[in-house]
Image (cartoon, rainbow, N blue to C red; front, side):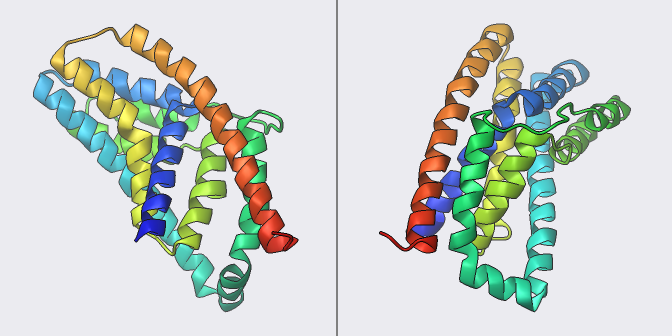
Length: 229
């Protein structure tokens, strides 16, 4: 049970880190704006935050189930993953860590299509919050793609978890929106100041996580590839 809990904690952190990274944060700001402006009463705002969280979670779980089912349905791939997952995980963690430290970069980055689709659900009320959760979850940009496909899917394969870890990851990606929905619903605090603090926290959190990923990746390489420890 302890390894699964460790995996769940890692998935939650990856989700939170995804949510507060610059590109995903843009979609979350749009979601917060929708929840705050389109939903009237505090109760609706809070419920909108819950539905947005549900939407993101369902999207990530569904995608992870499809990916893992596809991988495990191919005998050679399934056998390869069982035998070499720990060897593959080391280099993957190092690459994702370098990406988080911005030592390597990929092109693209705007939420683009997700924002366009998001505008179409305006006026849907609470159903719009649920739809935004699904749409924005699937609007991958480089950082969210690296964390989901590079780290979360690797963890899910390692712990053989099609639902729990992707579900926890989805909850983590929606936590900031839910927290701000609570702030809006209660009518307290300054959103601007909160966003500023969150951006500063993201800068440090992403770099610390990147260093940890690289160190753990090096450890996995030394143990499972080079067998020197």
